Length: 218
Image 1 (spheres, rainbow, N blue to C red):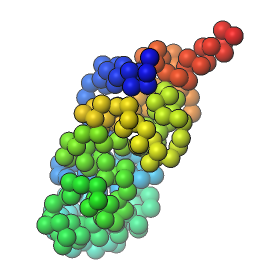
Image 2 (cartoon, rainbow, N blue to C red):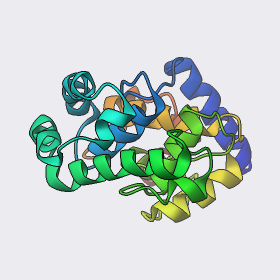
Image 3 (cartoon, rainbow, N blue to C red):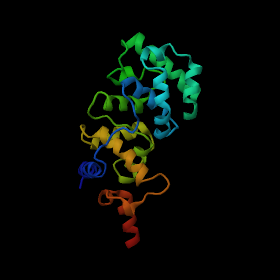
Image 4 (cartoon, rainbow, N blue to C red):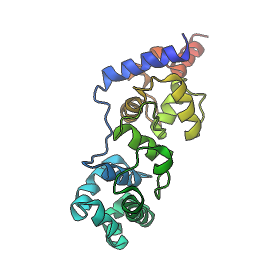
């Protein structure tokens, strides 16, 4: 079985286990997703979802964020960690969105990467969730870890290399939701500390599990 064939089986099984395959960050507007992803750096999505309702109520529009006092933003997002840098990037991004992009979150990688605090992971998430761009890969920690265990990548921890390798084996129309399902699977089953292989329905196509089985039999 080729890597692409295994990837197809894995994609279909993840769809069975996690039918929704949605981003766990809550947002009603594209720029709010952009800011929520910035807040999620070194922070849980659960914590971000606790913080953003008050943040978005205080600054209900992109214009309000652009005019915000960064210190007030800091107070509202303090519990997310790295609050000074995050507040600066949120306000600066709002200002740039208005001045350079007509108040619209860009729909391409090049322009998204111009925004303060935005890297490829954030840009790919925006492209996938807001614009339904095919072929995007959000290489977060769960995706990097599990893709390596499954053998869909060579085990590299480099997000850029993981993104490149997964693009080669995943169907373009499935890749974004695949990454969301990786997050769900990483939280529930294939955790960082211990993969609960006995509960995992991906075992038939998992490199880590099957190599372990061979060793046990040998």
